[in-house]
Picture 1 (cartoon, rainbow, N blue to C red):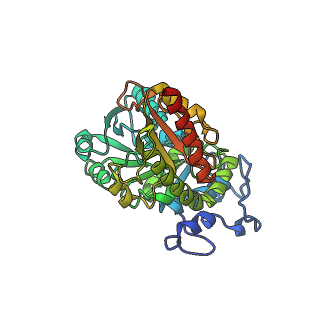
Picture 2 (cartoon, rainbow, N blue to C red):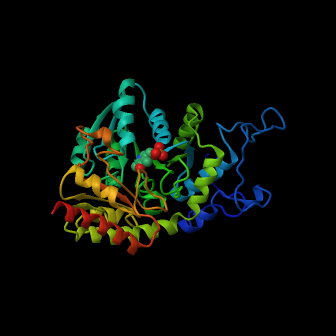
Picture 3 (tube, rainbow, N blue to C red):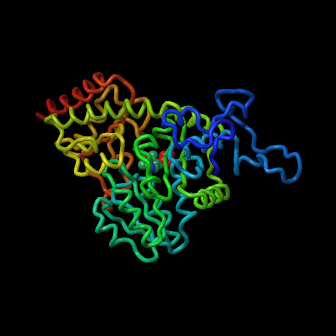
Length: 397
Ligand SMILES: *Cc1c(COP(=O)(O)O)cnc(C)c1O
């Protein structure tokens, strides 16, 4: 959906804080019999007064519940329009199909979500899309990888699972010099912690399955566009491809989004505490968290983000098996993929989310463990991790 002026109360959300936008943007009781919770419009088609009346038409193209979510997320990112999709991967696929063609050249980071890696390396490669894989923290390498015919530069920051930070403003300049589109997967930050469009990105992608949904009960994605023209291109492409969010899923994400600011503040504080505890732990070799002074891009993260988020990863001392064993020993941290929910999760990327990257440029350390911090009491979480790590040390010793 495009066009985000509030039809009932205000001209714009620009002057309102994210907390207020999260609760109200796109959600107008006046349009829904006074309902404070936007109704779930379970209808595939809509009656028209005449042949062309400008109203709702068909739910693949637009649906009132999905539109409310799209308005809300566009307002949170400061975008010109948003398109909600059936999953984060549907958002990524739609973005690539809208901005590339057979033979296109794309620059992707070497620290990247496993599914995105698979899409470029094993699906789009069959369609002739050429990819250059670079360390995005090295701006010289990014500049060298961008070709005169590069269509798209893909950024993921913070990256999954190594929490690398990419300088969005600097990479936007490099992409735009070559006439390429810059898309940023901002899933780990959520719209609350960073605003890639304000830094120069053309498109922002989220897996709404994660922080925006926030409750492990829905799969979804969104593409937010920085210009009207881009918003229209993405919306039209998504409507044709058809990987759109269903009304019930859109409603669940909309409900989760209302509490996003409160949850992001909580998990950022708790993750900082856990990153510090892990740094001091003898069974841990290295901690990856952008909030730590020891993070190589801490200053950039501080500049680009308002806080550092709820994902922490760390390398255990020992072997791949030792890392897998730590994941199996926690009692409160649930051994499961995904992130950004109320429940704290632990997983072993080399065996789970990033198993297909082994032996490639996007491979992750075998001893890496990834945590997603939830809303449980942080002292309980620290004690759980301590016990899982100490037990390992005792067994090994
Ligand atoms: C989970 C995730 C995706 C994919 O989203 P789905 O909703 O699982 O399709 C993309 N990027 C990042 C950074 C993710 O964490």
